[in-house]
Length: 69
Image 1 (cartoon, helix red, strand yellow):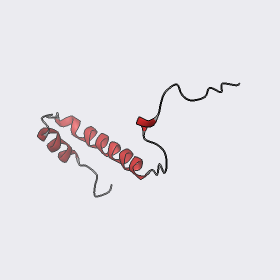
Image 2 (tube, helix red, strand yellow):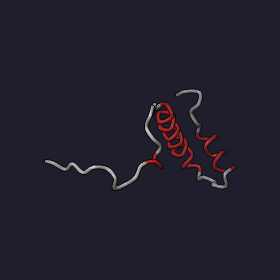
Image 3 (cartoon, one colour):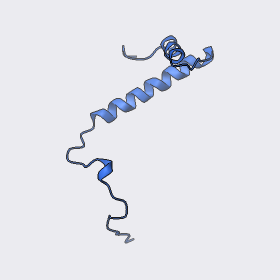
Image 4 (tube, helix red, strand yellow):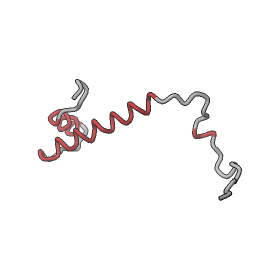
């Protein structure tokens, strides 16, 4: 576990501060889920999209159809 991993007591504290009190048996699951989400977001932040236009620039229906099988 890295130093940035969320512990079950910290997950319970943050949930309570957000107005979402957790049952004691849920602390570990919520902490694990939060850690997983954090890991995925961290990987996404490392992606280099280069010259890829933002999604707002995509126009559905304008792509050429090439459905040869």
